[in-house]
Image (tube, one colour):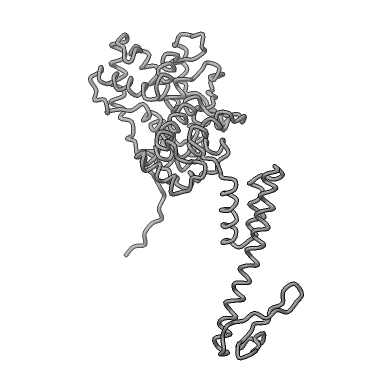
Length: 386
């Protein structure tokens, strides 16, 4: 389609353009109609670009003045600039960043901002310590890198370079995400979180448990990690009758056992303020009554001190006890007592939801799929004869 704005004059085609209320003739420098139309398209394109550049320059100057006067923050410009085409928007940001270069944010500055955050942190003490340790490993990796604008690729590289995988990787992601968010930096750590997986555990070997308890009764004063064997026997029995996590049994207090019922806030769910409550097994109460009172109010203050010393100290102490009893160190796990509790309760006819609530699980699927090791009995319809 020919351009009606073209006009031939003196053998040369001119393009008629209206600017500032006046008609102007711009020479195309072409003598043939086809070449003149191609030249006219180029001229109009350049004029459009000039118009856009002029508007962009005006906008940048206005925002730069407002930034210099302190009338607007950089974050407030995202919306107005976002209305422009993406290319021009990025050009505008590039120009402003050259006028007002953003300072580099180091890992140490992020952590200082996190510590200065006034928000109440109800996380457990060992969770906070773990978070600090995880961020320290990240800071060692980051060095002088600018971590204020981390994207998914940079977050992934950090995790990969630290050699993290599985649940450990997820733990780092959770802790780093909290630190960055509290520091006011939107880093996409959570986009790299992997589906949660549960470690497969063997059901409790009751014969091994009985042999261990019998040895403890015969050798009550033998120490394992500084704790006498008879104390270990009481601790094992409490785990067996309650299904508590070893960490919760360590911190179990007398105020949490009243009128034949146990009511406590598991350490793992303390941040969500979620309690568990269940009637104590009749065999549990004599075990607790036989334990000496302590000013701390805890049933097992020695185990609590061992647990607080190091997360793995309790496991190491139990392994030492097994070896002293002449049992293989891997023949039994403290956590297996929790699995045994779930299995025995369900096999005895307890409702899955009740058992799940008693052990403090968020979902019954966790209880049924990973903690129950009994035989699943189902009713099947009869088969038609053939």
